[in-house]
Image (tube, rainbow, N blue to C red; front, side, top):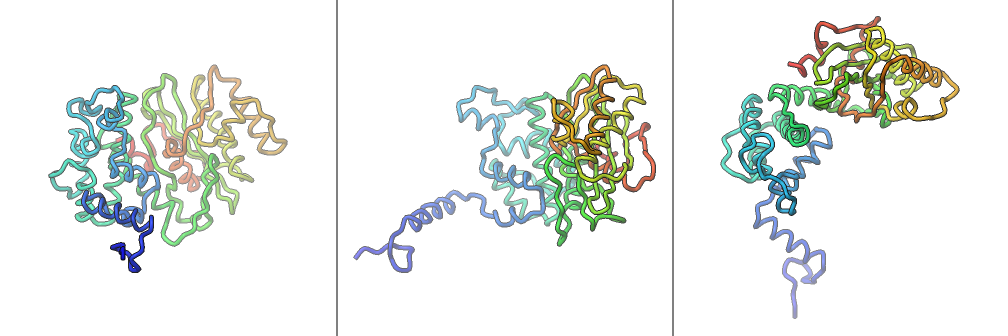
Length: 366
């Protein structure tokens, strides 16, 4: 009689045939096999998604794009010399080597040109905290590579390292062990859980990312932090010139608010008044609150409430500027303002940092 090898009953099924083929393929090709450890890492989900793409060699490197018949130069955008594959862009490029050297991680010299083999060795060498640090470096190295491709801009290695350190700290503060987080709705103020009030007022922002590198006009990133249990609110804002260099920052407590959106509107009103008092007449305002941005940039009926009053006040102030626009940015691009806002609850009066960046974000500008 016919007998299917691999099944206890000796009966063939499509599922058993599939796993027979896939299992043999994985075993013979030596693919990455430590996925459970990767998925359990306490890092942002986007880091895991990026790493999954890198380990499966599906990042849009020049080598992969050429295989897809995209007409593009094979040279690496960071060094301009070598052909770019995943291993080169994340590990072997001269710019990347500099970052790894300054990270002080005990990473041995590369003996392979296959990324998943290199990363598998890293998992065997580093402890859990060092693995999280390495994953953060890989993610922001890739972001820097994309900046080199699209904006012809590369941050200094020290800035990459400072960004990763801040990102890990912020993620761990925002996602403490055994603590249920009260997550803010998309596009609203940073809602801080009641358990974090008092002594735990630490920066609870999400992933910090490098600010966009180019705009002729000065720009101001702002956000409101909001304690839902006590209705307390605060604003954080950072003002940059057209090249992304630091000018000044604002941290201030706000009046009690009824909702995250109201906190964002009051924060916008304070920021516009602050910029006007500084003599600024042409500026881009950037917020991660999509609802507020739509109220201020599109014809939209204003609610007949305290929220509507705050929005109308913002509109009236905007008319007095020579030029002002309110633009939406992802929360990950507004991380510095989040850090300032969550630390502003410690102040009883507005704090202006004209002489240099405030301590919570000073490492980013070193």
